[in-house]
Amino acid sequence: MDDIGAKARAAAAELAFASASARKAALEAAADAVAASEARIMAANAEDLAYGREKGLSPAMMDRLLLDGARIAAIVNGLRAVAAQKDPVGEVIAEWDMPSGLHIRRVRTPLGVIGVIYESRPNVTADAGALCLKSGNAVILRGGSESFHSSRAIHGCLVQGLRSAGLPEAAIQLVPTRDRAAVTQMLRAVGTIDVIVPRGGKGLVGLVQTEARVPVFAHLEGICHVYVDKAADPEKARRVVLNAKTRRTGICGAAECLLVHRDVAETLGQQIVDDLIAAGVEVRAEGLRGSSAANSDDFGREFLDMIIAARVVDDVDAAIAHIRHYGSSHTEAILTEDDATAERFFARLDSAILMRNASTQFADGGEFGMGAEIGIATGKMHARGPVGAEQLTSFKYLVEGQGTVRS
Image (cartoon, rainbow, N blue to C red):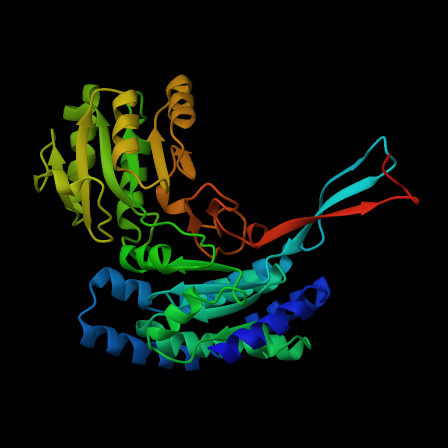
């Protein structure tokens, strides 16, 4: 790990002044390599799936682990989308002149070395590697034990891209072991790693936030709420809630709690609950006829499965109060045609992402036009919401004078 860290710092120093065209070329070549290596990546993924079955992973976790032709194509498209984005390094954020004669610019600069610790989703290898490279950062990737072989195959394609563009291969390194001691060393690598990004379940993120001695971009859980207002359009509401819960249950943007205005509980609210049950969702309900009665532990819980908590609330303010109490500041949606109610929901909640009449499954950097994301940050310092290439930069001030002295 010490050797990996030293190589990463050296690579970061080179990347800080590498050309935008070289970084773009590396990502384009990596995308080509992934496309050409589909069979090899799927064979590696088959080994991981077998390992996951032996471990008894849940269907939702197996879905997170699975790679097929469509998902590999999405990785390729994500790499190309990141390559095509405007390069953030060196961008002038603000510029002004002072009466003293100084000309001042605030410009974007890479963070340095980023450590990414993630669990079963092998596509994170490509997303994190691409975004860190695009933003001029070196990255140390520590994938989950379940995705070990898939991540190695994808990482090999990223290295091919670096090599073809003449960039240091140590710019994107993958920890070559399942040993959890490597995670501990990353968390303690003050002076080597500039920021840690954990991407996984509550256990992993909680460990990182507790043990890390370097700064962390993190979200603890994706406890996403959908509030169906009395002024909701029934067709929109039924379609959005079903998608928010069932499209992919194992991602952090999946809806975990349904809140329904009391005035539509027996009509639209119950229709939505019936839709969910018909789709195979277990609805743990309070004030609605669900699969079973909800208990207090069902609220504020990230199921990551075909399970959702549901509750009737008096109005939008009661929904807001519920979300403030049980939410994780990730993503919340309101379904309403009333502009004033929507504005109240937006103004009085402070989650990283707030949506109106749209599925929480859109809580994704790719869907925000970022090409990919390294994660959804729910803290309030530096990065918040989907973390793309721009969010992986800091800034510095460039100050120019003409022999200017201070009186």
